Length: 490
Image (cartoon, rainbow, N blue to C red; front, top):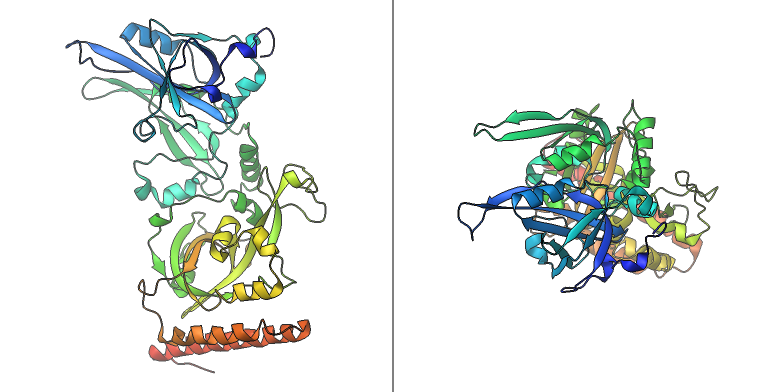
């Protein structure tokens, strides 16, 4: 460690194996539960007590520990340390973790082991600050989840009913921490609670209630608007810069991409209905979600003038400035190949029988899943292969999950993000009769395009196909309006 604390005297958490004996581990406490009592089956009329905690000794390794025993021992042991303390555990019993059963009640950990502490054999010692390496203590501020594995507060508000009872991850800034409030239940049990107000780019104020003593103590240590991680710094900088408009920059939004469960999105709309809903939501910061059955009418992945792949900073996810080769958030130079990664970043148009949604954002892993190829595989394609790939999707009916956020920065006033786009199952929703000839039309275009070797002629052919696409789209709309007995003009 920092001084006379020799690292070699400790077993690292990554080296733990079931049934290891006479070992000593060190780690910072990153989580802890309250003490709980339950009837002792062996001694009728008496109670046993337990509590658990999680320790961490490196960015990638942390493990759960639990202790069982009589009331005095368990309460004394629990009171001896808090979250954020560094502890040394001697002679714990190492057991194999029953993942499916235990992770219902304990935090998920990368280790396949757990620690059990007994009164007669195990000891827990809290390290003094001068004994501990500061790098070990700093692990308390390092998230245990991936930076993209969380829900935004807006997602929770929009989908709260479907998230009821689930354990989720949240990335938000602390707006305020309330004082603990104490109460007595109807059966005379004493309790306490503490309300913490959170906010992020989607919600200006969101209440989170802490009920157990350990989480209340932890919350009391939080300083509103102070940060410790790159993720938190980016979020806080955004909030400080956008206090009035509360609108998320298009590029940073790709970094704050939510991992929403698509099964919670069930409302099906037409383009016309979505535009109407957007008008009703004007002035509201809350996002809304929907399913659209439509076809991609613009997908410029084979146009040399349109850039569909960009460099993103591997630390914060922000698009790197091409002119300076620098990330404006982390100040990292993109010439260092380790500091950036390639990501799809494109705008597409979606059309159904009621109209068109222009400039929908298709990025990152969603774009890879939609196109069926990685960025590197796409960059290795010839122009002809890219054109063939495009025509696999153009004018083909798709089922598309969308997120809508009212944004004054967007050209249309509406920021539309594609969450999923896959070819639709014909049995899911009746297709329009006019689309029945689409496969034949696309097949003819595919046969002609790769055969053209002359670039100018290929460009001319592309423009002709674009005009035909517009013609069939217009014919489609007219057909539908005639079916509704509306007045049409050509």
